[in-house]
Amino acid sequence: MPQPTLSDVHVDVPLTNISVRFSQSADMFLAQKVFPAVPVQHRSDVYYTYDRSFWFRSDAQLRGPATESAGSGFEVGTDSFSCDVFAVHKDVDDQTRANADSQITLDRDATEFVTQQMLQRREQQFVSEFMQSGVWGTTVTGGSGFTVWDDYANSDPIGDLREGIIEMARNTALKPTDLVLGPEVWNKLQDHPDFLDRIKYTQKGVVGTDLLAELLGINRVHIAWAIKNTGAEGEAANYEFHHGKNALLLYRPASPGLNTPSAGYTFRWTGLFGSGENGIRIKKFRMEQIASDRIEAEEALDMKVVSADLGYFYSGCVS
Image (cartoon, rainbow, N blue to C red; front, side, top):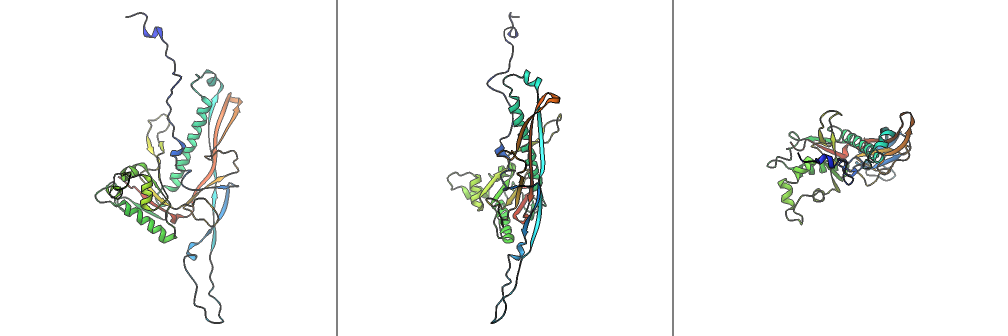
């Protein structure tokens, strides 16, 4: 054996110019993008709703000389919201901080970690509230309500989506503005012959979200790229897309306001002061009893379907 050995002349130490950590960009999460956020001063309250059936018919009648005009009216109701408070923390203890290599930025890592935790939780709430069968005015299921879109020979995704657009317009006098697609659905649609045939003479020649939006006559197409690990701590990791193999057509206004319909709103309690641009409040405070600094993330919100007929849900779009 040659002397000295490799281990005699070098002791492995962490590199100072790289480290490897996986996290998702906040831009990949849709929960804060799709529906307008409504700032509210109280955790719970009510808002007014108008029965649209009164507004889409006419009670006007022929009026004879010296007679009264036909009377009519409309109904006003209320609905409610309740913002729940969600929080998570990561403690950074004094001993670990004192012993950490310079490449480990514990406070910054803890801040980014709890932020990721909140973004994950928010996306899960978005999916449970909005990306489910039965919560919208219409739900159609691949295989029974329409031919799954990866059956290229027999499916008609353009026709299926336009049918949803027509039904929403017929029932509400509003056309969808947005389409949410799971990545696996988008992956199959990009190669669908119906789409490729329609765009083969365009400059790009490939299906992009802008071309799909233009083809359908809507404003935006969102691809839900965020992923989650469904495995518990200590178990094998199991990574999945949050939004599954589904699609949602919806109408949303540019911003919330009086007399303004929307498929959904995110009510955000402004009384929880100190939240950042993404709606998450980050706090750092001393936990002397455990000789640690606590990094805590917190937010208060309610995601709510407010007009079910302004959403058209496609479940199980691809096999």
